[in-house]
Image (cartoon, rainbow, N blue to C red):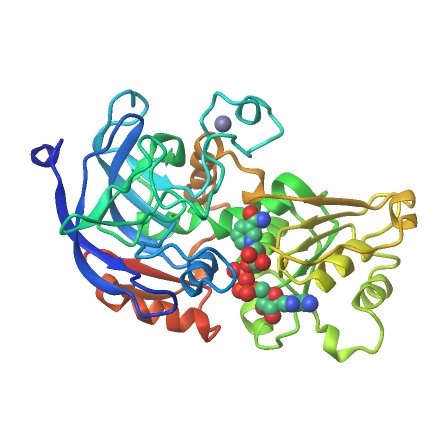
Length: 380
Ligand code: NAD
Ligand code: ZN
């Protein structure tokens, strides 16, 4: 491993040359890490909706050519100047948002929204020098959310890497670097359902099912799944969801249906859809006096949340979360330990597996709504 330190590495990466066009496996040059940066050998990565969303680039700033990928696990190859917390050989999860440990957010117990390393989807370069570490014949290839894990080697800011237990299987815990932790944390860190409570989960994609996994771990006695797509219900049974509501099956608003089912409202609700209607229903369906609703889904640009203020006076609480309120470096290693202690199940989220040369299949599975998580092995 040490023979590559300080040198450019030539390796394979899946490059997105244009919006919405299949990725192309190319040989790329990966420059050595600069100050506060780490070069990581990626062993497994997974595909998340956010990759697909920015690859399609409908309505966002298109940044191409680009190497996508942000859910992954790997091993440190070399570190740049000033990096003391990580050394070659350490096992890490790259995270699309970071923790500098110095800003007001990082110093606050309550926030994970780091000033320096908070997600930035428009930036395709490293903070240190405003340049990319990837190139093909000298032409820069841009980064994505500071991770770019669809490459055998990538360069990441040290603040966006969680050092994890080296015994953890990387082909399982890789999915903790984004969606699964988001849903899990939304329930465990933000909604905090008491033991024996009722929890409604809106949206049964990977994030919602991870929120359900959080409700199961917290000891909720009823986990009610709400989705417009009845196909999602079968899969959801594996996640402890026992009751299903499809808003399309009812003439009245779904919040009224849930209130009838639960003697006035659920104790907690977690919205994981991105639909403004579901967000409003998720808030209005919680019980007065103590109910808490948590929004996770990313809304459309022009959406506005409308509800009667009386709902707040009646002591319903509305919250939102980013990355399940986890601080990437401080908290993710403990989530990995939850998996190691078998408190958290990850296998059931991994529905598909491909090798790097077949990465476009992972996009097809997700676009067709067939996969929860498709992992991509880099050594194939
Ligand atoms: P997904 O598309 O796999 O799942 C969403 C589900 O919601 C689908 O099954 C869909 O049928 C259902 N749905 C849509 N509208 C609905 C409605 N009105 N009522 C009930 N169900 C409805 O998505 P995912 O990957 O699980 O992600 C869920 C959301 O979480 C997305 O909006 C994503 O952008 C967001 N997200 C947020 C964060 C964060 O930090 N806050 C992080 C990651 C993802
Ligand atoms: Zn910070």
